[in-house]
Image 1: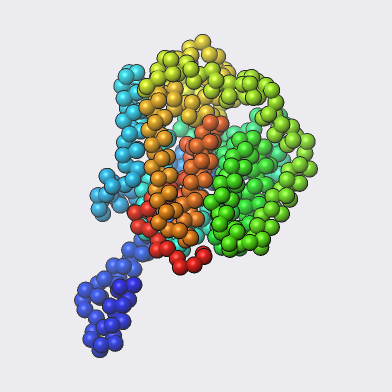
Image 2: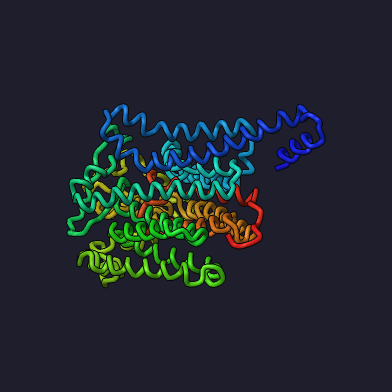
Length: 480
């Protein structure tokens, strides 16, 4: 704005633009172009990480492995370039939370005489995509870029829904075709097959399993419904409906359970806008889609009803390992971890003891120092309960460090809500808060919080909110 104003005044006064003006405009344009490129790069990588394991399995193995890990190197290289332009890493809001996480993990490794390389490997798995947050923290976020980022991600949602529809029609053959390969690190990538013998659909798209597909669709549901409340376009409502249907057809119980509090939180956040702006014009379609979804889900198959009911039977609620292995592990292992290694845990599981990716032999679960007599068919599922895994490996200090990280992001989102009432940034911050609740909840049931093919969107939205917290959009005069 100032640059345009200076140039206009020079033209009106008949004076030629100064050399400073002539050099400032290109610099501003270059900076804007570069920051827009950051958005597009993040979107490209989000697509790549979600789709690559399906596409690369058709290439020669050695070439596929190079192409699989090359984008991560590009991501880190971009962060390095940003750092060299101006060293601001200490002022990055997640710098100290990440240092806290790294310190607790390192102390755990040292106390337990574990390999620091194994500690570094765990840190990479948990936090490798924090690079997305740093890149977008360094990017000037505008209303257009918020919409650009969310629209781009919802495009990926449509792709996954189309793949899910093909799986729905094509059955197990289509699922095998689109299933991603796993075990790339071992150099023997294999294609994942759903081992659950059920008449239901169990969609997984191009993602690692049905739980990831379900949580991916819950995330899409949150973002699509958020944009619908902001813009009122029926296109976003249909995407939200499609995502909700994807959650149901994934047969992922915790994804279906997570969608309910997400929907409640969204309506709580937007209750004033619903009552004062949207009235019945936008609420009725939402209710109508919800009813349609319930009808479709109820009539789709009896196996879906049985799947939902299985989460509430007596065996599942009491932690019977044959009905609810995750609850059983939580009840069985939490007191053992707290008694044996309460502060810094037992240290990382060595690669030699870890279950190979894609392995279906449940007897191969790792032996735990705090529970050496627990059979492998139980510990095999330990990575599914991420917070229990963190407690066991890195103790209460590790859990506190993770909590500090999420709290830092939530604090930034609350600041954006407070400082940017009734604007796109407020809507985005509210969506971020819902996503934090969503991923924290999922950590008790599955590994989405560290899943390579779907967690980048969380770190991207977090980075966008961190940028808005330090450089907020101006509050708008009226409703968005």
